[in-house]
Length: 326
Image (cartoon, rainbow, N blue to C red; front, side, top):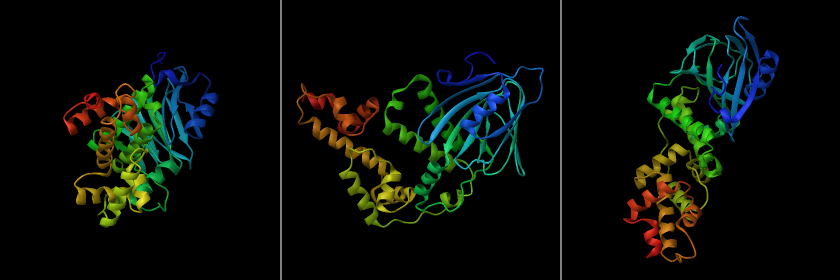
């Protein structure tokens, strides 16, 4: 394996030729497992890079040679393994798939399983904290999950919903590789993690797919009114649609449907419009020599200034700096 060939090269966690060391240290991050090289003709060369966030972590991993991997059940997290090169044969119970760069494996890790990685295979692995993912699932459904979340083994990355999920993964990976500013913004990072969880839950078949895709309960107009009041009162705070829904006692998807039906918008679009109004109101009374557009925008929760300026111009027909100068 070529030096620095793996993604996330600035976040080296392991480089070893020792099988036992690789099994132990990879296991610390990705779960206890058996590891056995198939042949001694190709040198064992384990490399792993990784970066952790709150409920999500990204890793890249390769062994240089063909290996057999036998993960053991893990209660604390689950994995999505995306081959970048090579293929992997993955078996769990009666399910058997061949993972490729276009067909990932989703490892719920609720039962023992086995994998065979070809020589030279390198993979990008997304680790989800199970408690965080199941809590997010509960917010989407509006109730606490009663059974452990379990996904189908194979994920077709050419399917549009799965492609959308992968695009979020690539965004997070790009930020990690370039030291992007988003990683320094806890609010933006939390929203990105939430989007990654939502897209996985909606894109990948699971034992909760029916509950997520079934008919949504109609929320009472009073629930939407309470959500509007909450947004108006807490517009400067970091808010997600799941937090708003939980505060008013409904599921996130049901609240979104209520906003679309009653207000012809979404909770987050409504929040953005409220924030734009608050920014404009503040810019019209501030002294241009004593404040900046950036200060005001950040105070009202806008972390991407380019997108903020574009949305502001579309809404008010002028740039925020023009409002401030006037």
